Length: 211
Image (cartoon, rainbow, N blue to C red):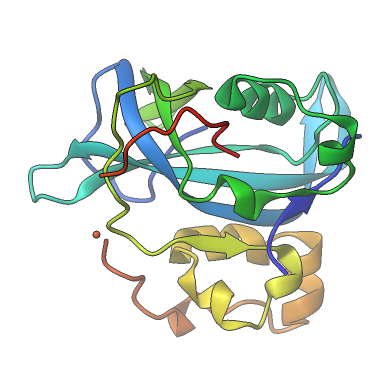
């Protein structure tokens, strides 16, 4: 079914190379529903649905593979939600009411963009990249074709081949969600059963809204 939403922090499991802060050209590689997780804010704990968006950049690492960065947040398209603001800025044009009734995240897969990326140090002393904002790709600028396989995972896709396409460290996040715990049952999720994730393949701007 893939990920959908209605109106209503970048890191890698390993310490990969880190980008310098700046603006980079990229293309949407993955949209992954992470399920429902408990979050505490101002001493109030709530259950929130979360989502992760992953971009593949034109910038290459030393081994020739493209950098990837991701954003994780609440899956809400309410007008005050961070996800709504991110997608609206990316589109460069407001959503219509009809578009917000049931937004299909597959629409943003492969969509080009420019990402404003920062660099910060985490509590564990490691350095991370963070997606500050996403903007439309300027006319005449190109984004490279994706080298990795696209992923459109909705939480209802647990147990399907699409789940196997999700990076192992992200699968573990999904397994800790309310939906993941129900799906995997008392024995829980066995990370040792993970298969090796797929190894990480020019498009001209046509002036149209990217999604």
